[in-house]
Image (cartoon, rainbow, N blue to C red; front, side):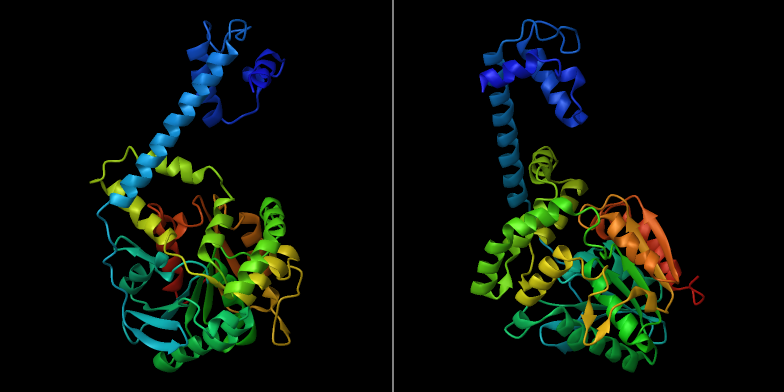
Length: 397
């Protein structure tokens, strides 16, 4: 190890020439300043560097970071926040799925929000001041949420087709029967992709479609994710065979692989938060939701991980419900697509290809991340306001 560091420090590709982000260069400069008699920006700045001291300094830095990480995790575990925001009562049920009525005038335009099958639906109702659902109801819309629920015995055998034909379309029929109007549909993440199916199959049930970071081209910007999934496929098959579902721990591990240093960074940062601050409470609200995941039905997991990520079936025209190819070019209702430019879960290019394939789609790019677009501090201004203005506009340009 010492020889490796000594070789690096004495090479022509030393620190001043390394193409590394500043977040990595700054700690290295601090270590060099601690172990060298010269400024790390001076040349030749390696002349008096002591490799043993440098390695010891790295150990101290690593130990310090680990201690801060542990302090952050313990502070999170000890935080007094507990979710008290109650969801409204269910007005319709199909298996473990529920249709929740968030209010609004009975004569108002109905809108139903369709979340992803992965993670809990209350990301759209995270807090009083970060609730897309409550904001929609307050704007005058008759607001519903389709909560898929956690797969029960029957749902563990569900395919995507089962969810579309057995849950989503019947829920839209229920709303139309209750209100006398075809609802507007707002689909978030995979919920947006699934919402495309009834827009093709049953256009009479959808007055307008909103896509919030909806993935479509699973080969755009996903090379690393696809390589990981290919590597993990044997392990995934073992889990699916044993449990019938993809466990939440496995799902979280896949998401974490998209940014392997994120967990360490965020808990080290949280270690320095004032526990009584609003900033700390918001952190815990979101972290609790992230840790409150649900498993994914086995057939759905196979279809998404193998056929969608592996073979890019939606974008290649191979995704069918029944005998019908779900072709976005066949969507005739007004459509609005939000593309978060900082999205690491659904690459912007993936969602943008879907928007461009829909003839009447209007695209809005927001400088937010995948979760930040619905539950972040900037969500009310940059997403809620333009989204609700579009939903409340009968013309829906």
